[in-house]
Amino acid sequence: MGRDTDGNVIEGEEQITQAHRKIEKIYYKHEPKVIPEVITAIKDADLIVFSMGSLYTSILPNIICKEVKEAFNQTKAPIMYLCNIVTQPGETDNFTVGDHVKLLNRYLDNKKVDVVIANNKKVSDAMAKRYESEEQKDPVLIDREVLDEIGIELIEDDLIIIDTDNTLKHNSLKLSSLIFSYLMRK
Image (tube, rainbow, N blue to C red):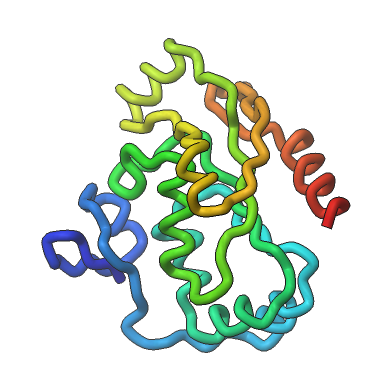
């Protein structure tokens, strides 16, 4: 469930995305039961990775559970966020990399995001215009000074590939190499 900045309650993943309202808070009606294997995996992890995807409807619902937050607080593993290349209409309009990280940190308890991987390649003007007009999406910009202020390590690289369907995708080989390189440093 979500509550927008006007106090309206929006129920359901699809409704939150389609509402195109600024979400103030997401929450569950009833606290979900988390399977023990999830809690064990978090506590024993070498690295926790929040992948790119919908913040409000894919990532946050998995971290707002009380048991999951407690497990994050107990793990020694750093938390890494793989930032989206473009914003999601109705959820992260005008968000920068720092805005994504700050939102994640707002929902985490004591444990916070340690490192973010973000694309630093400029999206071509033609592709940016196409995404803006057809999907109401904009490139996510890196705000280095904000990330510095909140103490986030930034790993940036040219992570864009153009898929066969002429859409922007993350370069999965380069991304996996960056993740592995970070993990080897720790």
